Image 1 (cartoon, rainbow, N blue to C red):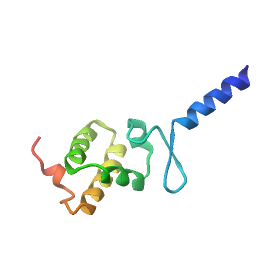
Image 2 (tube, helix red, strand yellow):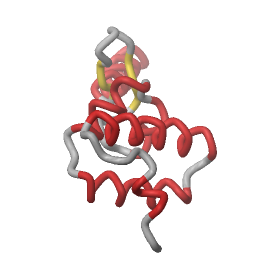
Image 3 (cartoon, rainbow, N blue to C red):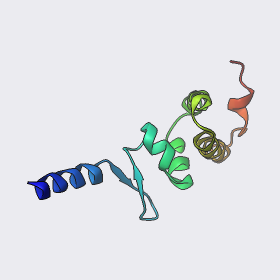
Image 4 (cartoon, rainbow, N blue to C red):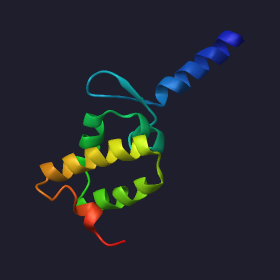
Length: 97
């Protein structure tokens, strides 16, 4: 019985992971709060490149409430995505609240 429970737990754990472009894993499903905390820089940048500028700025505001590590990592990826989109990378920071 313990082996069955362990197998089910392992299956659920692996199912809740996302494979990164470099072959490593991030916890959670892409876009989830856990994923944002564990994804690598390339994955975060790729995620934000799929979004419009308005969505990126919306996420910028959301990260005010996250811990410093997640906030800095995600905002750096947002700035890189904005730069690739040929938009001022600090645009979201300059918008009035």
